[in-house]
Length: 316
Figure 1 (cartoon, rainbow, N blue to C red):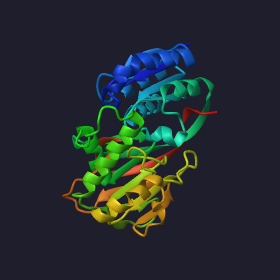
Figure 2: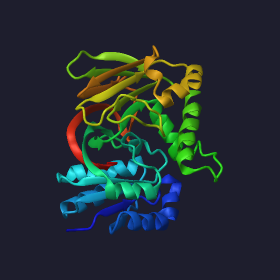
Figure 3: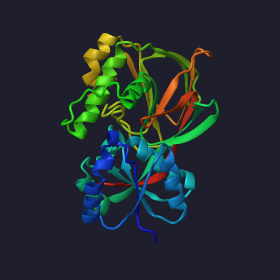
């Protein structure tokens, strides 16, 4: 039987993973055991590597990187049609999905969890959308997909527009601060998105939103607890709509968004659904979507829950 495979994104955490890999690998061998390794060289390659390894009989594939890397590896496993277990070795900017699973952020502790943990079967989301070339596309997501201000925040973080942090800031804190800085920068100039939403078989609703989120897990945006009641195995997606918040309200209420106490705000609504359809209210306006911290395309999009679709190694 093939050894567990670790798929490493060396560019995750702003390239820190590449520098840290020798120590991460040492911790993994000491606290987990033997493994094989493959490095991604471009965006999307994690999907191909995970799919090929799954079809070749690998039983455990470990994603080493951030939320985007974990999402790619999960997509590869799910695309293969094989019942392969996903492991997580965090080394990224956001770390949102591992927060929901309570996986340690430090590689040494995460390696022990990979050895001592148990498999847990979770739901995943599947989104159909329009890619950047105008073609229909589909991908799976583990955490949160959204449209509105969240896409602009992701763009800022990825472009480095908010990377004003000193080099000695810890990685776990730097990610949260980078996303927080990008949120505040975006709030000052972001326009509201006009969308049309349909949940399951209900009637369509026109909404003006600061952010519209379809959540399988609880966190996005570098630790923002956007869906505090989301459960990974309830067969439902949590739909959180943040309405027409002014820049001032975003500034003053940002802590509530991060700590999950925003659900009582009058501008915030919450619902559960198995299927969510979203389109732009203005046919001439293109509205981007983000999926697990990546920016794959735009609306219209259909989000569906796939119950119990993936096995993930979690703390015992």
